[in-house]
Length: 314
Length: 314
Image (cartoon, rainbow over all chains, first blue to last red; front, side, top):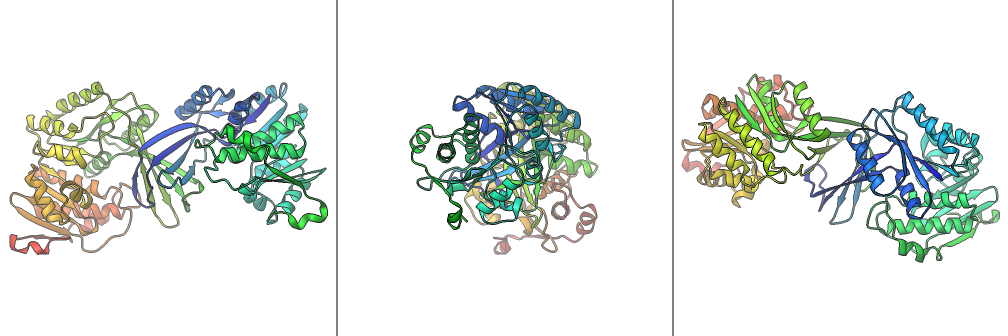
């Protein structure tokens, strides 16, 4: 089982309208809601691929109830703990005329120390039967900045590897506990290392403690660095669509690759194909299954030799 | 007592952030909430001015509870009926760097026929002790398009005049029941009459049934038309600030003027001063009391004679 910790679950609210004018009052044509948060997207994809995954997080209030109901309706197993605050909302304003989506992300409810202690206890229980812990997304207010570090340590004490998809200080703290894999995107790489070259930045982060680093470079694909070498995976073409959740789909594929110890070339090909199939899906966070099946054999993965480093992407 | 019907109560949510980038994921720094809906703004101002007013509307779900709690905390009397749907939210994205506010207005919960019948019954009860009915804002889904027309008729059957601040078909239907006053803004005037000259449009609406029409022309002030003549009121200068609720403050002043049968020049001066003081308030929907006191003696009100019609504002 893969335990996906999503400490800042969200009710993703989408406002559909023809066009939104900044500075004006815009009437929303249609409101749709679904459970969200990066970890939820990861668990949805894992579940869709037939893997056993459970979402561990907090839910509170009416928005929290809606999140739990939507997870149940989607068949995503959950270990969601009650919290006294109200689960945050994210609002996505989607302009149907252009397809442009603007996201507003609330910070989330303040989680108390006892509530955090309950999550740690539940996480430890789940580790007994876990093959992997995925720690994904932002931390709600109130959680210690080393929350992910604590979880990586707990997982390791149970012999369970951890994959961390986070940014800022929570990510840097987690590195000290030697996670199996981290997956920064291009912006997070720069923010964490102040290096603009993705390969140099990925190697710098690996030196700070992660066993492997996979950098997601948007439409340019993925870059993986571990003790055995460096790999680059590129999609066969540039896809346009809704990139929401594309990084989370890559995490889901990387999680399966970690559990199955799939060699890097195939692991990266799966991740890039699933990511592209997510961009191609009309539903935010969903993925286009036929596109995924078609693309997985068409991803170009190359090993970067030490003397080829100039060829790495900027 | 002034009964303010606000059929589409809202939980007004404000997202504060330095800057919001269209097409990007924007982290919200701070979330504030308060009861909203045009009628709530009117009742707040009436209460602040010492008038006895009550808000009649529907509330449902957690957002509805938050609306009722905020009204109670603000000392605004309420006659709010339960509804099975969830009260709508409005989201105002306020960019602190520029002060720009972008509003997103949810359509509101579907109100069933029995729920509407309950509101009609409660309205009829309240009419026994009412001096005026104010009908304000949009209709939630499910309400008949002649909802305001029904309320104007019910009020008149109790000898109570009605002030309608609405637009579109609900406004046009209400005209047939002869409300005492309607307060369209410049856009609503054009939409209702297809005339671009505000004076001609206001007169056309009066001919369709309203005893008086006060058109709000934004920073250009107000234009009033009734059987006795036409008046124009202008603020002494252009004020910059947050215009949210400025029209609702004008409605509150016009409501008091109607109840007290204040002559038009003073009635309009009060409405323009209160409107400007609302623009000057840092809190959306509040008003700047010292500014209001200072401005009310400085509003220029002129009577437009029939042969001066060319001087009317475009």
